[in-house]
Image (tube, rainbow, N blue to C red; front, side, top):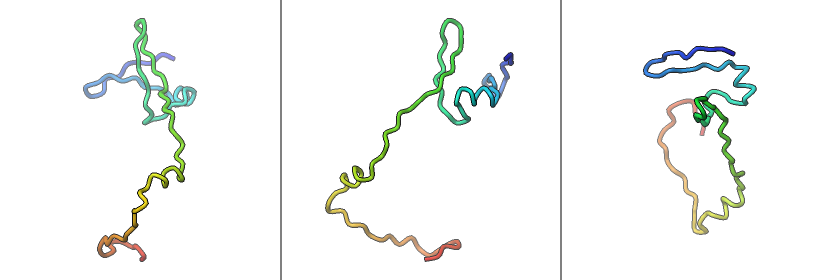
Length: 82
C-alpha cells in the first residue's frame, strides 16, 4: 500500500486503513512501540501482561479492624431511588 505523510497541526501523520489495523490487532487508543531501524519506521503492538485479580487476596489485605460506615451524600439531585 502506498500512502502519503499528511500535515496535521504541528505534526506529520500517516493513516492506516481499518484492514491494516485489524490484521495487526491494533485499534484506536492502543499503545504501540515505534522504533527506527536502518531508516525504517517500525510500529509494533505493545502487549501488557495484566495480572488476574483474586478477590480473596484483596480481602486478605484488608485490616481486621476495618468497619464499613454509611456516608451521607446529601439530597438526591436526579431520579435516584433510595
